[in-house]
Image (tube, rainbow over all chains, first blue to last red; front, side, top):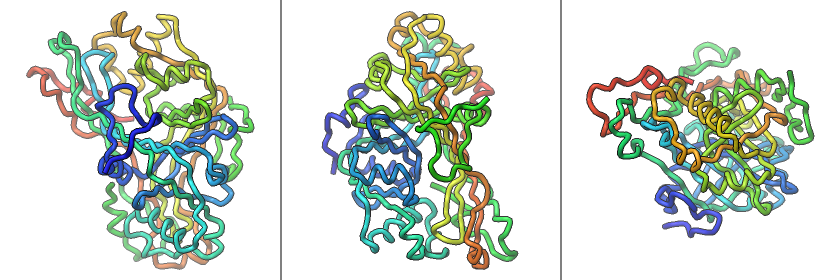
Length: 215
Length: 215
């Protein structure tokens, strides 16, 4: 299954970096967990980072019912949501050919407010599980009041594309003779030792999903 | 020195997370190296990830002279540039109070094209040094043709603000008694073992800045 290319998602340059198959796009969305949401009330672009989760062909974002971003987006305005994973620094022999290895997804669309209680709870569970799998079952579920204080939006994954760069630097042929180290410095988001809450009572062990957090 | 708060940068919610001092804003910009640039040609928001560097009160971004984003931005349109560093997952006792520790900067403004050759070279050096300090001195400098093929934009750091969350979860008082682990899973971007270019001749050592890459 592939996404249809539109004027907005078609790559004008370096088309070989473009990917429109769901497997690639969803793989990136499922590995990342922070997106940058762009919207432009009255023409002024605003870009805000936030967590997200994918479930099927929908992307969920959520936050306080008082959030300006969520209020604006739930009005049905055009949005652009971008997810970026940086995989490495590409060190070439010439300054010009330096690059980065990355995987990014750009989604265009209009979000809608989830009003149905059951769907909203399922989306909140998906958001929680996407970021820390296994956590939801252990914590106190949202109360009715907390549910009312939370806005959840759903963005259809219809107009989406991925851009991917992998591999070593591509230098000009004559530069390969230069006595300069070249290659890739891999980068990834790593979890450190969990830091317990100062008010945590003794005897509560760090759960496995926190001790060995991986994406 | 602090940035003046404007309608666009003022935090409507959680104002205690807002920071307008240059030290905080520039500290985040200097630690990060990927920004998300938002612009809205004909009202349609677009968000694109790219590298950047700060020099003084300017933020530089660059890319191919053929880049649609750089062409649009150099036309002097309103832009929003956001830099986000994720520091940890905040695991609370209730689903509702889960959060993230992060530091982000949002900049509003209009970029201008750098046309002066000397300023453009200095900006490219700043971009290179910001991402891999020490690299520029070892690699082949850009030729005149490469300079012409590269667009560098400068965004004035005038309307900027930071948002920061740190520390443990803040739970509802009655939830502190729940027998649930709570705390923070720290996250950071870590560099792995450098991967040499398959065409690298023998005998060229990995430079220190690549072997021990840190931000």
